[in-house]
Amino acid sequence: QVHLVESGGGVVQPGRSLRLSCAASGFTFRSHAMHWVRQAPGKGLEWVAVISYDGSDENYADSVQGRFTISRDSSKNTLYLQMNSLRAEDTAVYYCARAGGYASSGYPLDRWGQGTLVTVSS
Amino acid sequence: EIVLTQSPGTLSLSLGERATLSCRASQSVSSNYLAWYQHKAGQAPRLLIYGASSRATGIPDRFSGSGSGTDFTLTISRLEPEDFAVFYCQQYGSSQTFGQGTKVEIK
Image 1: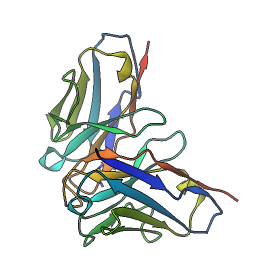
Image 2: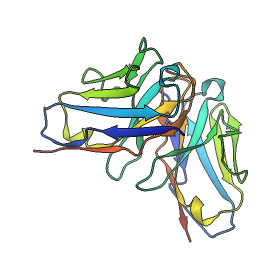
Image 3: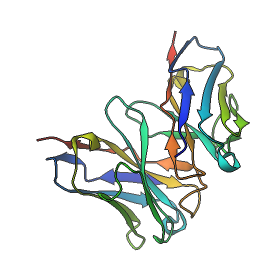
């Protein structure tokens, strides 16, 4: 069955960088767009970024534009989120999620991982 | 950016009761690309409804979605113990945005 496993979270100081990974299995990874969604403590879900099935299209939330970069390696069935210039407000559980199709819009998020916690604190 | 407003913030109901959750968009959602998710603490969110009214794979038929344009509703016909959670609507037609969530709690 579909499996998405995030890793790479931890405690990081403000201004530093962190890279999250999401290992995918149980489906044809290169056929699906992929997303990152986060949830800050006590808050709701916030969409972060999306990448199309072939990596040709990326979109970001305004709150992370210019600081975060989404990428994928289909040879490794892995999704990444490079997070630079981290701020306290980036503290959250980060989920990777599969889109129901290939494009970066027009598809719901039909499978989700369990999430990895990122804490930005000095 | 399309803003989604969910109401109520919290719904306190008993087992077997009907739950009606609302999601209002600040502008029309293209192609009714509106989804509903269930999220329990410490778990992965789960897709319930997509395209405003289509149930996702494996979702019981007590969950139903309706609406179009800017007004959407998620209905749970008879609450089961496992249904108590936070529910989010999401539009995926113009970039992506989530509503702020409705918590369904046991009365």
